[in-house]
Image 1: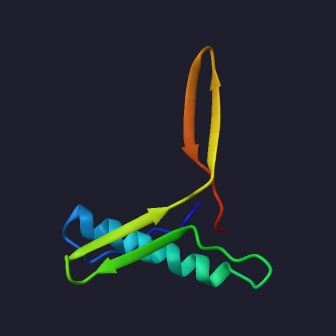
Image 2 (image 1 turned 120 degrees about the vertical axis):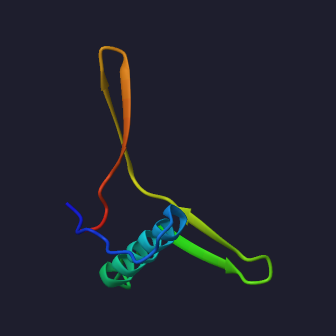
Image 3 (image 1 turned 180 degrees about the vertical axis):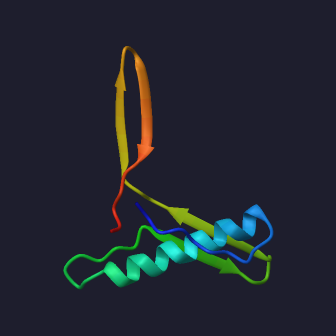
Length: 77
């Protein structure tokens, strides 16, 4: 289970950006030359005052009795 992320942001949007930055830091810490990890990108556009967060994470598809469940898969330790 992942450690909790401390955020000083007072809005959900700010907390979202804090989480994305934390994921980037974990990816950088666990990347190697042989296995680079860069599933979360944050692009900042100063002129328009926007931040774009792009994330590609593993998914786990499961289900039973006709019900399908899609959950995020773990890729960081």
